[in-house]
Amino acid sequence: MADAPNKSVWKQIGEYASLGIMLPAATVTGYFLGVLLDHWFHTSFLTIVFLLIGIVAGFIEVIRVVSRNSS
Image (tube, rainbow, N blue to C red):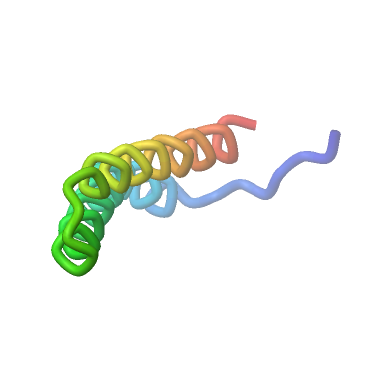
């Protein structure tokens, strides 16, 4: 396995600090997209569906960043 080039400490701090914003941002985006679509299509279930999609997307991105930096 080839050695990965060393990242600067500040770049690593920035990547891990973004995790604190990434998960809530994906969750809120999914929620508001669901509310918008519920309002547009006159339904009541899309808010929950898109909220769950946003949560899953946020966790997937967190796992990607952590696994990319841990190897």
